Amino acid sequence: MIGIVLWYNPDKQVGLVWCEDQGPLAYIEPGVAIPQGAGPLGSGDQIRFTHEMRAQVRHVTCIETVERGGAHADPQAVLTAYHEQAEARTLRVVA
Image (cartoon, rainbow, N blue to C red; front, side, top):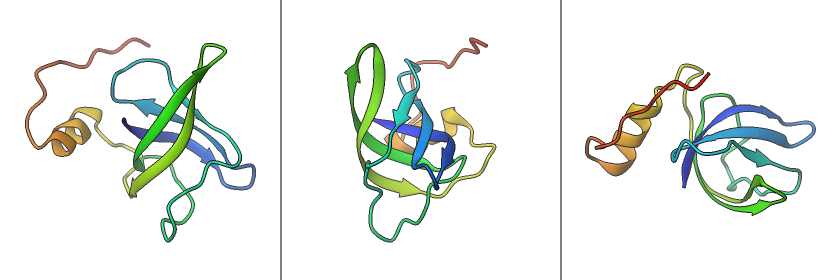
């Protein structure tokens, strides 16, 4: 799965990730390894990761890749670049 880091606290090694399937946010907990050389995560970074559901909470289990992004990353642009084609689905605002 791919996602965008909404926020990350490097001191506590915790954060939240928006997920491409527009499902629940994913929680990064202490101990999740960040790829060597990627440095600390920041808001807007694009990550590819694996996850699992525990007690109805999506937990990041492994961060595979990190691409530096901006705080104003456009999810549709991220999906299009990731899949190298325009996505058939549309994003909707739920907040």
